[in-house]
Image (cartoon, rainbow, N blue to C red):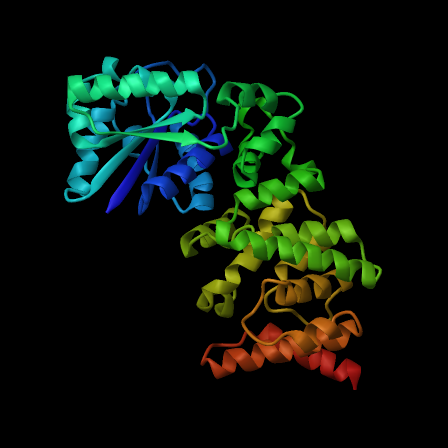
Length: 396
């Protein structure tokens, strides 16, 4: 296997890092990419007030999901300076028969011979240096490649980036404390949202009064990357339904953005949130773990983000539905069901009906959901049955 290794302080990780890493994956035909944040970088000190290791790691994990990479904490777990030689030795134990490619920027490459034990490093991996497509830099890189080959017997690959994102982490940290325009441009939405949610780099966002745009970023930081298209699709569908049925569009968008905010938590984390906020679970909720995210999501929306009762209740019932649903509850239930990325069954009729007759659409959605669960041998929550039968009675 061909494995790329890209390390750095990543304080914070930005699209410049990701674009370079993605180019290396394509150019070197890498089959795995490892992003490794440094604990204590040997070449420079982390500035005072830098996020703790765990939060830098989480930013790298969120960014890694966007490029099919893997974030490793091995340098953060190791005591002392984060020397590359130690990292490569650890990785060689995990991948003894694989070829390692060490990715680095221009400054690191041109000073590589001054690193700790450069000859031993060169023996363990292929050195891969990112450069700009400029004549002066090409000449310096070519000379360094020849020097490292002769002095260290190093195998070197030069990667001339066709497009270089000229942004530094230092500049981004300064921008985050100000107008944040650069941060929005050069950070992935999930990383930017995580920074806001955790109050990193002096952002000081008030989570209980987040503008809609910031809530959109923060919500993405709480999701698996694969879930983001669904949530954004639910938001756009909820907004369209709100306009059609004269509901509050902003409330619909906020409920949609947060409806899956605890979806990626495991069972114990859901139960801990319920204990934290004093919520007792019924037997059906305890049995069907997949239902817990609707309840815990409503709790987080209320307690962390200060959302209204209308929004939190819409989140609470978006999975099972309930009898006598409010207008917003119906909209979020349907938006979650019919948003554009959904393809688990033929939704043509339901999507059309949602804009023609809201109650009949909710009834059809509930009927389809109940029948699907039964066909697959899965338990049906009583609230779904009550909601379906309530609407049947109302419409007949």
